[in-house]
Length: 410
Image (cartoon, rainbow, N blue to C red; front, side, top):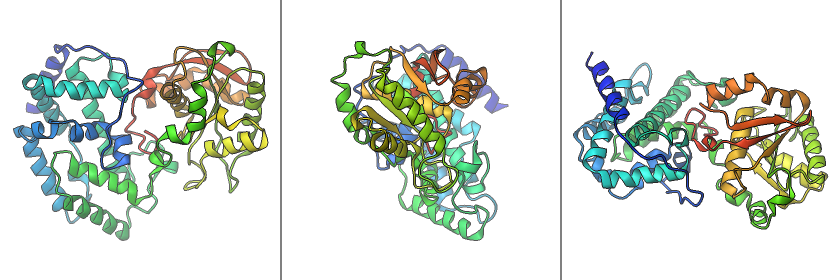
């Protein structure tokens, strides 16, 4: 009953707290924490650790101090049977307690907290909530981060809750005694770091589980500005008025065996190369990560670029890679991110190229529903299909929103 009252009170206060929505900053400089994985998946936690004055503020709040002590104790003395990491997950009541503590900090220390909010809004990583009040904006971002930690702990300790278990699961058999021993060691290492902030014990174990299972796909090509450096330089010289579209997204297709690139992927590249030579767009974005076969060392996008450049003789400076996407939804989302981050005009239409059936799917209500369910928004606006093999759309900047429920491609 008490938790229900607190939840209702918190929601009432959030709805009455006013703030100004802000656009993401194209020239935003990201903070760097001690873990690239953390920065990619849990940037809120990096900000809480790195923005000057924030750690000190949190360590003066009685609620956050108590939670820090509780979780530090739990990681140092895990249960001897059952679910090792269950006690490290953030319960609904804990999430509400932290939201309430953040609200208090907003009210009592507006200057220091404004710095945090400015960083969050400028990054674009919380763009889905850009129109919310400051209090609601921070509360929603915190809840996402907490739920994301819970997702990893549950998935890589118990093998439960994964959205796509076939391609995203743990490398090891999670119910084996040997794996349990490895998880215990991850927890010991987290305890040895002597956490300073309430979220760090759980966060360190979650990141440790990803590293234990070699699920570091999210950071293998960082920074993308370096991976795509040649094309990024060419962007600055481009006259956009010469082209109907700013960029051409070619959707990836996973190999089914040991080949580095599938025949379907090659076919899509050939279609894209033909359209590129017709002057439809000055840049190609190939999209696809390390997906199939499970554990593959090959990224679809990297191999597609090799095929475009080496076999189809497309200039390397015209091809950018998104080496992370694991689904059609994130193919589109990640391409929009590259458009924004590279300086390609985000207010102009871009293309999406694939085979006939795939394009029909992207232009269907089914795809819109899947995006809404899995991402919370549709990354492509005003879709128009001009041909059997390609369609065009306007980028939606909500695509910048980090997705903590896809830690292999957040």
